[in-house]
Length: 224
Image (cartoon, rainbow, N blue to C red; front, side, top):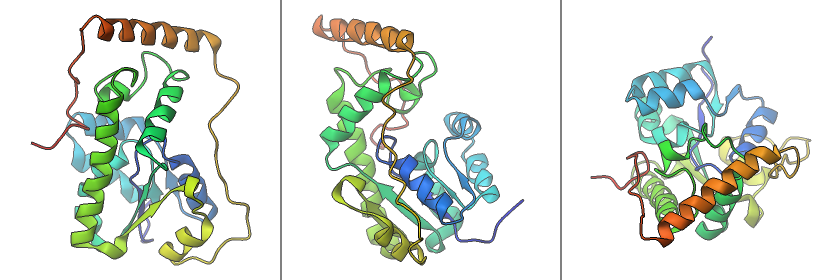
C-alpha cells in the first residue's frame, strides 16, 4: 500500500526524543515507521535506494536508519517533504543519555558499533559528541541552502510541544496530551546491565592503558 500524503522524516539521532516525535505523528494520523532492522541492514550494505523505496509504505518515520539517509530522502521527495531535526539541550546531555541507554541494550545486538564505531560511548565521548554536532550542522547547512521551509528543529527539553510541530506540518493542535516519552526506568534485565557494565569497565581499562580503538564504521564519520 502506498500513500500520497506528504512525507515527514525525523532525522535527529537516537536519544534526541525521536520516540516522542513518533508518538506525535501517530496521534496526528500518520502511518508511521520507527526503527527498522531491515532498512538499517540495507543501508549498512549500501542498498540505499532500497531504504528510500521502503518509505513508500508509510507517511512518516524516525529512528534508525532514517537519520542516516536524509540526503537520499530529500533527493527522492524534495522540498515537498518535511524534515524534523530533534535535538537535546546540549551535546553533552545527549552523550550522557546515550551512555545510560547503552547499559540497558543487549550487548551483542546494539547498533552503536555500526553507527558510531564503538560498542559503548564511555571513553569515546568526544568522538560521539563530534558525530552528533557534525550531523546536526550538516542538516542545518543543507536545508538553509536548499529548502529552509522544509526543516524544523525541535528540542523537547526547551519546551517545544504541539504548537511548533503542528504549525510546521499544517495541522490543528490535537485535543490530546503531549506524548512526552521518558526513558524506561524499570524492567531492564539486571543481567544485561551487568554484562554491559563489565564490558564498559573493560573498555575504559583498555583506554587507560593506551589502547584506544579507531572507529570501525564510516556511517557517522566525517565526509571525505
